[in-house]
Image (cartoon, rainbow, N blue to C red):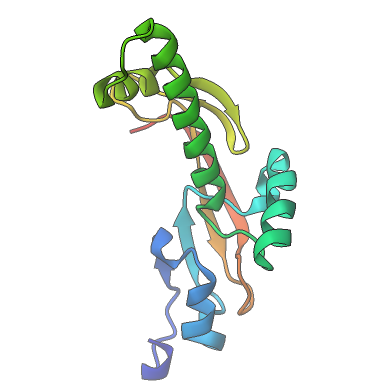
Length: 149
């Protein structure tokens, strides 16, 4: 857009929540707003140990959904443990684990995790970020905590 002379404010979805945007758009990324459910690592104090271990192993800081992937794996582990306990020694099925996921309630690195009857997280945070410079991640402009729509 900038190469074509468009100077309007640009707002995009969480598909922009990646350092790849900076690699592709370079200086033209300055001033871009994007929305995401995956806030920057520093928005989650409980994620510091994870972020430090991630950087030590991979040589770079975790991006957007890495924290959520970590929490999702922990939800799945808890659901398998709960389903196994409920099965009373019978072999587990995929349906057993899927049902158990709905009942998981844990403290994740992204905050408390529990699910409603539809399987949506009961409480989530939504972020609007701004790239003040061609550097990832953007700066949080607004954070909204809400249940699923």
